[in-house]
Image (tube, rainbow, N blue to C red; front, side, top):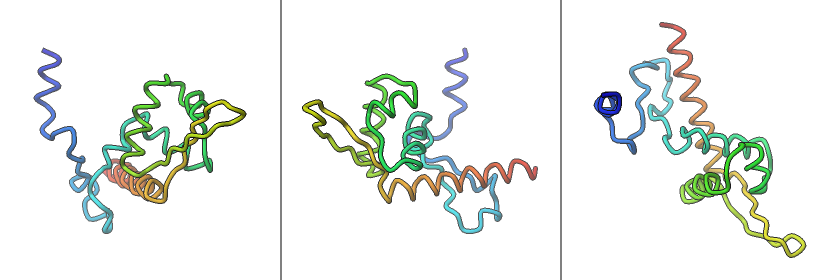
Length: 128
């Protein structure tokens, strides 16, 4: 019953962004009305947030910071890289492989848009 109930409540496909227009209304002041589902996922939001405040982070630094597994970080990092939000550079550091991540300009802009959306949502929710 619980699974079916959850499935029937979702009226949008998973790939379609959530609309904020109904909550944000005219207060959105021209801001885009879609939530970036790519960044909205918890691990990917953690990755772009960590990279927003650091010039770059190694794979191991991100893994420790986000308390995740190699596989989980790798999958989410690849999705962000495919979207052009992060760059992933493979280096050799004293003959040991090292993977380094950086936030791109597009990634920073996407994060700023995401944060604007969340601020509009918070503002609209508090006003009601």
